[in-house]
Structure formats: structure tokens, C-alpha cells
Length: 563
Image (cartoon, one colour):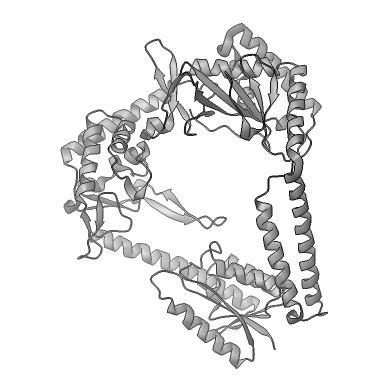
């Protein structure tokens, strides 16, 4: 007797869970009528048929199909599997390869024709339904009703479906934001004040940020750009598109000519005169920011600096009265949440970073010593953990081969699935346990060696840096700045314990000089004040004076844009 699996799905939370039970009952009756033995029921509740992502039921069904758990898959209709032509065809192709029949109660046994037609009809239905939903939403918006979403300052009216009402406490916060911005405070200063006063941010967020205040002018979001606060609802600003590779919905802005505007004066929170003053100030700030960006030179460590207190990035904050440019923690600047919001002179940081690297890595001997220390430290860290990982990988390969052997025996008819069910179950459990344990193990380390040509280029570049730095300091290395940024991944700034200066932890990449084997990220400490190289495990670094660490990664990483 052939074993049959049942699959059921419904699309939205608006449908009842009874839909799954009803589909399963219909498929179960069909299985009994046709003499099938019921193997298992798989289901996905409130999951769209537009994508295969985040659907545990269909994933488990296909996994068990590969294990030979059944010979037939029964669905109410083929569109229960998918309403996407590509996905439905892929499911059918894989089941056919596994010699598993696909049967729809209303469609009969699936064929190339029925799969193609059902896939086409299902996708057309889904796309047409999306158009109808948008048309319906447009009608609701035209009537002054909500078109979806809930802006800060409002909540649904429990007595009038589709209507929104003002939340008084949040409305006062919104008016505060507009007043402070009109008075000359920046979005960062406003966010800092709101966080300081412990005012809850929108949507249960962790804190207020400048981006929450200012948003995007192009998308007309953020508190300062939301025209709903002056009684004008704007709809159709963006179109949501599902990424076929991830299943996630991505928003894309629509042309402003396609936006729909409807007056809803009952939802006004901000007086018109205050709105106009704030918008005028915003236009001036946008113009000033654009001009500043055009004349602001990119610095040597732009996008590479990190705050040692909280891990956030660091940004410039302009020059002080001496003309020196300072940097500060972005988290402190944006929302005032850094536990140690210190500022540092950028010139000092650049000199420490460049001076330390040039002093230690500008000659062949120093570079070779550095690599030797790195290799020695990595060899020390291999130990039992790496050996255990190697053993687990071997055990996993054995389990995979055993499973392939059993499946092959079933496919060739040497054994029946029932005869080896216990063996398959045991192999699957063992394999799952190995994979779980393996995921917790560090990557296996490999011995790294010089790539001579790359090492020669590195040495030449470091010599040029050394000479330029001796001649003109940081300002003299502009031509070699690109190379320096390639070998640095981050420079993390710490306040000295005595409070008199800054310590810098440098992390970078040596993969361009080494063999292309994957490596564990292991640090090698460098005493920036002139001491000898010392190999230190990353987890146990100690800082003495100004020091840095170069880390062997899996290739060069592009620097984060902007500082």
C-alpha cells in the first residue's frame, strides 16, 4: 500500500485555523478512497503562497520526501503548494525525480500541463488580488480612512473601524519636537533630550535617534516630514516588493506624482505656523548639509573608527577653538546612550595608527617577525578544540554516507522503507546532534605562509608610507591612504585609565599576504610606544600604552563609507 503525505496551507491571519483541518479532512478522505496509507500531515498556517521562505511545513515535506517517507503527496489543489510559477514547477520537478506522485483532490494527478496551468493561474490570481487590494485601499484613503500603518501619535478608533484618533501624550511629544527644531536644536540634540527625559520612542524602540526625528525627505517619513501631523494623509509613497532570494518585503519609493493626498483635519497635531517654520528650517539644513559634504575632505580613517566604550562608530564633530578636528561616538552624538562619551583629536588618532603600523611593518624583517609571531600563536591555539572539530566533521561525513547508502537501497528496491525506518531515524538524530555540536566549535586553523609577490608589494608600500610619514606626518601619506585603508579593518578608541589620552586597538587583514586557507581570527599585540612584538590571544589582550592588533581575516573587507 502506497504511503501518502498530506499538505495544507492558508494564506492570512484573517482565515481560520479550521481551514487547515478542512483541507486535511478532504485530502484524508481522498487517500482512503484511493487506498493510500496516511503517512503524515504537513501544514503552513497564515503563510503566503508567493514564496517558499519561512514555510516550515513545505520544507519538512520536501526533506521527508528525500528520505523516502512516502510515495504520494495529496493537496486540495496545486496552488496550496505555491502560487508562484517557478516554485510550483520546482516542487513538482523534485517530487518527480524522487518518483513521488503529486495529486490534487480537485486536479487529479499532476502533469506538466496541470502544473504549468495551475502555476500560471495561481500567480495571476495572486497578482490580480494584490491590485484589487491596492484599489480597495485607495478607496478607503479617499474616504478619509487609514490605508494601513500607524504613525506615532495615533491609534485606531475602537468605535469607528478604519479611523484613527490622537494619543494626547504622544501628540505633546510631537509638538515638542517641532518646537525644539524650530528653535534651532538639531535632530540629534532633540533625540538626546527625549532619551534623557526617558520618553518612550515609537514602536517599542530602544531609544530615540536623529533618524527618527528627521527621516527621509524623499520618502516623506520621520516626524519632521510627516504631513499627517498637519491633517494631510499621504498614501502610496512606496511600493513593497518581495525579494525572491530572501522572501523579505523591500520598499521602493514611488514618484511623488503617484502619491495620494487627502485632507484629514481631525488628525492635525501641529499648528500650521509651527509646521511652516520647521519646514523652512529643514530646507536650510538640507542645503547646508549638502554644501558641507561637498567641501568636507575624506580623512584617512573615515568609516574605520569605533568607540571602545559601546562599539558604535565614530564621527567628526568639527574643529575646536584651536582648529583641531575632533571625533566622538555616534551613539553619544545621535541619542546620548554611550556610557563613556569621550571626544578625541583626529590628528592624534591618525598619528598613533600610522606611526604604529609604519614602525612595525615597514621592513621585511619586521614583517617576517610579525608573521612568525602570528603563526606561532595560531599553532598554540589549534589544540584540542580544533582536533575535536575535525573529528566531528569526519563523523558528519560518515553519517551522510550512511544515509545515502540507505536511501540508495530503498531507491533500488533492495529494502522497503519500513524495514529501515528505525535506522533512518537513528542516523537523522545522530546527524542532527553532530551538526549542533559542530556549529558550536571554532573553525579549524590552517598554517599560513607568505605569498612572496604579495609580500613584496606590501613591503614596498610600507616603505613608501614610512618615508612619507617621516617627511610629512599623516598629511604626507595621502597617495598611500588607499593602501593603508585596505589593511585596516577597524581602529577602536579607548580612553586611557589615567584620563590623559587615547589608546587605539588596530584590527586589520593579512590575508593578501597569506595562503588562502580559512583562519581563526587571532590577534597579535603591538606595543605602539616602541616595545617588541608580542603574540596575544584575541580574547586575552591587555592594553599597555598605545597598541594595536592585526587580525588575519578571510579576505579584505570594504571599509564602511562615511565618517
